[in-house]
Length: 302
Image 1 (cartoon, rainbow, N blue to C red):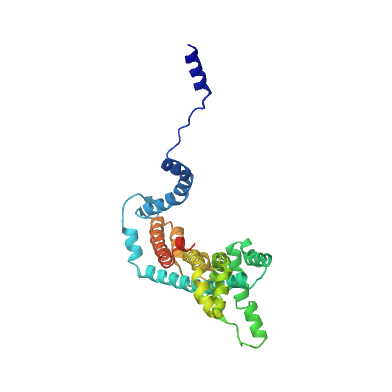
Image 2 (cartoon, rainbow, N blue to C red):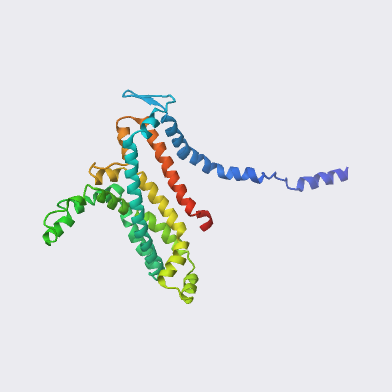
């Protein structure tokens, strides 16, 4: 009896063993909150848009169905193709300009500003315009570029031009200028972050080997800056392809984009047609992003 009692006492004193969850199940549990959030706020809306794109509609309402009419009208219209080409034109021009401006701004901040405090201060100065909305920053160009705006008034008063320049506002030039102004920081930030991570000893080693400044830039800095360029390019491409307000306001209604076409369709209650355009635009943007990632594998470079 004493032996049995002592064994029971020892058993009671031992802590209970907790059953550990399998590592695979634990990983799924840890990822489940993010999966639920992305699924509800990202995947579900895209799925709804894809479903609605097959519905029928008229002036009275929407009718659940499975029709390819919306895609046939979208892809079979020359107006749609012309609008996509116009949107791609804006995207390519804006991407090239933001890359040129953003790289040199980031390069100056990373390699020519000596102190970290001054780097952060100048970088914050670049972000000051983003404290206001895109609409306000876009509309602010109208009194600058208008027929009686600051630029035309100054040029006429100085006698440089005899009459105001008409194409400064409500033109493709104004659209590109506003888009570059709105999106340049999205190119500066990732490139600056990538340049700050470059080991300065690599540059010193290249200089000790007799490389010129141009050779160092082309063979050392640019290859190491590819991840930042790729990330900035993705931001600029997606934002430009999806922009409609800038094109509408700065072109004076004389130009069009895919997003503006969808906005007009929704204003006419043509939601299935707009959904079909949204699906096509999503596919085009994903193909462009895939092409960028095909050139630069961000996961290997970072």
